Amino acid sequence: QVQLQESGPGLVKPSETLSLTCTVSGGSLTNYYWSWIRQSPGKGLEWIGYIYYTGSTNFNPSLKSRVTISLDTSNNQFSLKLSSVTAADTAMYYCTTGYDAFDIWGQGTMVTVSS
Amino acid sequence: QSVLTQPPSVSGAPGQRVTISCTGSSSNIGADYNVNWYQQLPGTAPKLLIYGNNNRPSGVPDRFSGSKSGTSASLAITGLQAEDEADYYCQSYDNRLSGSKVFGGGTKLTVL
Image (tube, rainbow over all chains, first blue to last red; front, side, top):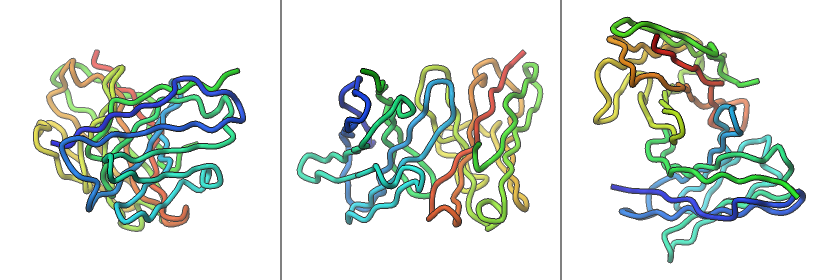
């Protein structure tokens, strides 16, 4: 059974880059799509983007200019980088797997953007 | 403003049937893309509840069912239980937004 676990700083300063990692256990990165989704406090879900195990990516057009998603196959991880953050990027960040439907989710990690 | 529109809240008494609607457009649900539904219990990560419009993952009770017609989809919950009180989100794909996955704004279900 695949499990996902997010990790990274819980506090990021405005204008800096948010960096999170998702560790995949119980399975391989191969043959799957890996996504990041966020949820601002009290708000709904927003898909950030995905990476396929081949390295191909697709991003939410509203975030595309600031997002990078990458794979680390040696450590069975994938990562999110979001640049030039503002308070609007304060959210719970989830890593998930699936293409059409997101069937496995991490527990989420809260990131606050504040000086 | 979410691409998919859901009612902010619905409610029902234990044992009753409730439905949650999800309205899209010709670039997402109406383009025959699948609709998926997620349940988010308070303080937890979302959980896949319905995939491919009307399929339940293993372990999801058959009290939950999904349907789709035209540019809309619905989630039905029968035999409402207190443990069903949660936020529910629909999700699909939109071909106008560079292949983005899109969500509804979420519906808070209150069990009276």
